[in-house]
Length: 133
Image 1: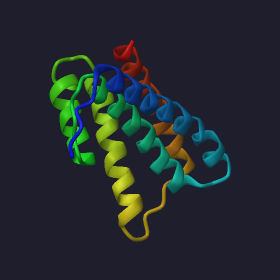
Image 2: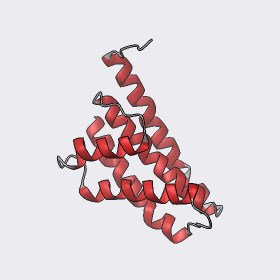
Image 3: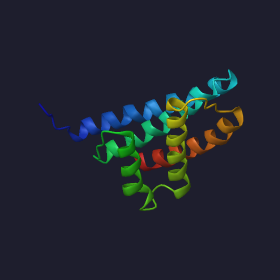
Image 4: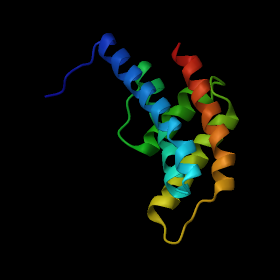
């Protein structure tokens, strides 16, 4: 049975996903400092993914896949200038990095990569949060 979500349900789910984004982003300094660079890359992507889901949910846009989230984000927010192209590219690059790190053999992230990606993820999440207000 498919249940229709109320506006209140959409808002609660969006807030939950926004909180997940913040919590996940907060994990990154620890992972970086402990040398868990592949895991940090994964969590950077997921922090942005949760933020993107929060934004899509708030706007009643549903998807069933990670590619769907990337596509809908581009279609509804990046292409309209609501999220900068730089942040849209950062999300796509994190998606690709996470895919390689999780599924390809002999892929190793570095501290330098994390130091480069972390502020881009922060910027993406800040742009999303501005749209959620």
